[in-house]
Image (cartoon, rainbow, N blue to C red):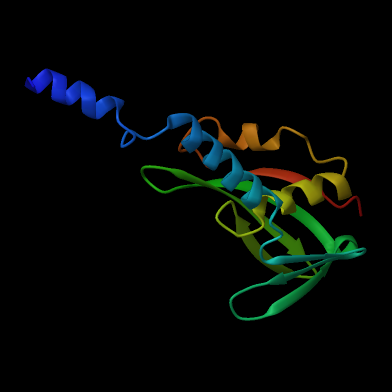
Length: 138
């Protein structure tokens, strides 16, 4: 068998990864990650955030401001939200387990949050793009 025939035979064999299966696995992994509440436990009046050092109960009504921005990590960016409440501030980022559900819950709880704020903060790349996405009226 010639070298070319061996290569073609190898490429047709079952050892070649099924790219559609890989894409399906990626979709499933994203769906699991998207629906995971992560470090957040939601209650009717707010949520409990399980940080590395403690658990913090935050009522939706206590949130004074949500500030979204991007951190420049040289080769990538990381989107963050500072939650300002009762003279405290905590930061969550897209790396925080439960990020996607937190973002969704904030949009439901505070309808004034722009639906497309993530796109506004993402572009242009490597810029901070500090944006107050929610400010309590009082």
